[in-house]
Image (cartoon, rainbow, N blue to C red; front, side, top):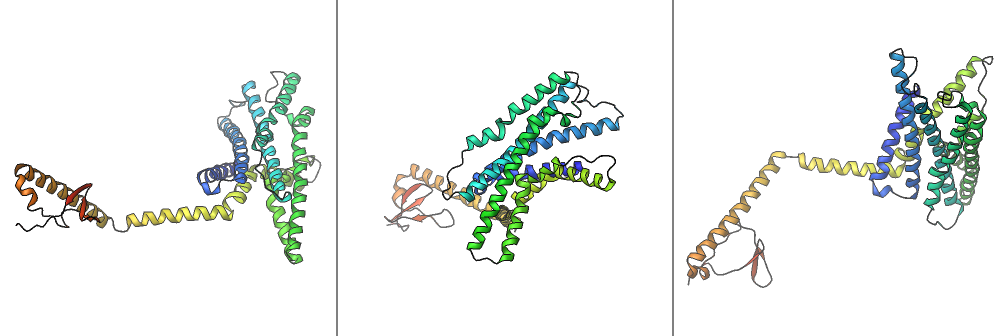
Length: 354
């Protein structure tokens, strides 16, 4: 279940990035932020899939330690990069909330300060992760393995969990404000009470995966062994589903299920089918037409060369007859009584000799 969700999320995010970057009509500030969020998701899932494949390989070959876990420095580096990318993912979710809240709260839409967004999304997480990794290294040393159980340490909660949960709480505030503004606008438009509630609920459900608010369930304490089995199974599978399929939900909701994106893809697909149908409608006739056109052009060139050679041998014939027909060459009559013959101007004279 987990690996299926990770692979589906990875593929969906990759295709969403491709769509947003290839179609110019979809490129805007909103999709620009989406792309960075999708990239952070994609990179984190890449590390998770690599670790899962490596564990599967070791199990099939009955190896106690995997290739990565057998090298403490490499294993610890993987954990550091995973936590960094996880923090970056939540940071870009926070930026999504900031941007969406600014669109609804401000009357004048200015250009977003993407330099600030880049610092928040990719840079601020670096000192936090470095501080956590340094604390873990000083505490456990270089022989601490892969830092098993690092999520239960005090350093992890100070440098990783606290900033991450702060971003989620801020997104909760943004979500409440967004729903409040939405309900206010619906009331001003004289919408019925049922429609107001329905649209507000729909907006909340759609924004939950984008803002990452559902990840607050990680704050729920892990069930103990003595608790009911049903609750333990529900808790574990719920967290696995949320962690593995969140990228898939975000990619579907904000790319492939978006009306604007579907319209652009539909137009491109229809245009490609029309062009392909036009070329494949009658291949034999198309080829024959091209061959006849080439033969006609060659005949025209040869005929002109022949007349030019005859005129150089007998200059007196130059002013007597120049016979051209529509089947020999293509002529376009000019306004001054001349005709253009493949870039050369030739005087039209009477073909009857004096």
